[in-house]
Amino acid sequence: MEYEREIPESEKMQEPEYSLNLPGVTAKAVIYDPGQWRCTEFYFLETIPEQVSGARIYQVLHISRQKYL
Image (cartoon, rainbow, N blue to C red; front, side, top):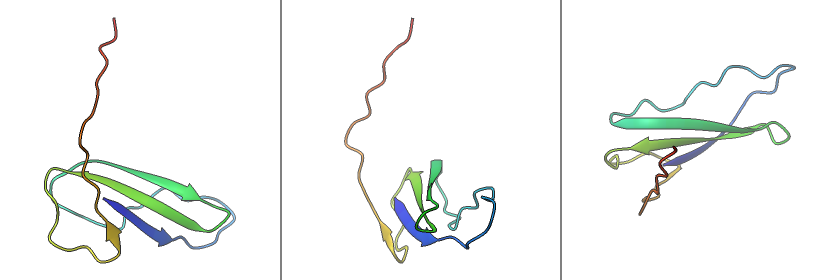
């Protein structure tokens, strides 16, 4: 799931705070765009939530895993 939001302007970047608290989250990441004062939050979920306003839902079809020797 992808969720975009504005971040408040400041002189220093702050530690990331996630906007959503969803059940079944297996991983999450935040990507900041300080030039636009926006960030995009990505949530990886076991099940799709019923409704999250302003979010985009993507379905991962395949994840390749390479074994390292």
